[in-house]
Length: 426
Ligand code: PMP
Image (cartoon, rainbow, N blue to C red):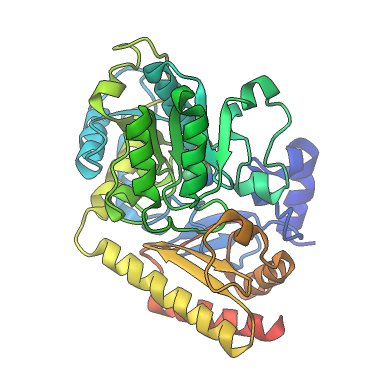
């Protein structure tokens, strides 16, 4: 029995499913999750001493690679001064100034401790601001696990086959309307029917929780236009895309300005952080300035702010996003060529430093229906063949892939070679 197997057996006795977040459990791909001992650069090392090239990056945050020296040092320095104050500190002001500079649609920002908190708070704010109850989301998009968002959700909810979670009262779920991602006609119809009740649209501007699906030409612009027409708040959930597809997020990449933005993952550099912010006029409704309540014991935590600030400082250096995009392009085109060589039907998507691999005969995957019609069994076999060869992909066909600045040409070449072996074996 490997050490991972021993730990997993122990873990299952006291932790539901042996994990603290469902998709880590390998439920879809089968087998035992690997327990990680430490991570450095592009690599994670499991408790049995095996090295993996990591394409999950802690589900997004590790855009600079693991254990980056500047982030580590910033955390150590901050820790010397105390772990939490529950009172304002300078790093929070630095962070707010940095975020509002990098993402100009965010005129004001509030820090929280997870992406879930960020989206939950942004929706409450949109409802409080508009005095309306209904929200619109898209099928297969995941925005964290707040009640009103676990309706036709993506990510682990989709992987485990529970896109509509029990425990969410029907009276609550009825305020969540769901449309097809990239289907503007359907959305227009929804607004024609319910426009006066719609507080907000929340969208992943590049969907990353039903694998990776970019917005169709004009889709995000269409959302902007409908929100303007009906007085609804447009929320871009950039928890995944923020600082990943571009320094200014997907809103910079596609040049569409939301009213509110939610952030997470990279903004914490690996510490538990989220943020929501946007138009000053809307943010003025948040307590203590306004009546919409939102709070957090550990919000703006000094260690988390230090890690996040160090990350954003590194990412602001010239050439970072060009390098990330090029690495991703080489990886994805190499894997696509390897699949073609071995006659394995594969479609790919890429936006900046995120990508998707789809086992399908479709040339382009641009919606939820196509994403869920892919050959999951083929993906699952591919996943294990890659894992055996030391390449760590997300253990679900419904997750986007993430690269980091630490992935070297050699790492990428190794990954493409492993993919070729895997395609040959499929
Ligand atoms: N929004 C998006 C787009 C996400 O991808 C995620 C997490 N993967 C969340 C929100 C929730 O973030 P967290 O897991 O930090 O609560």
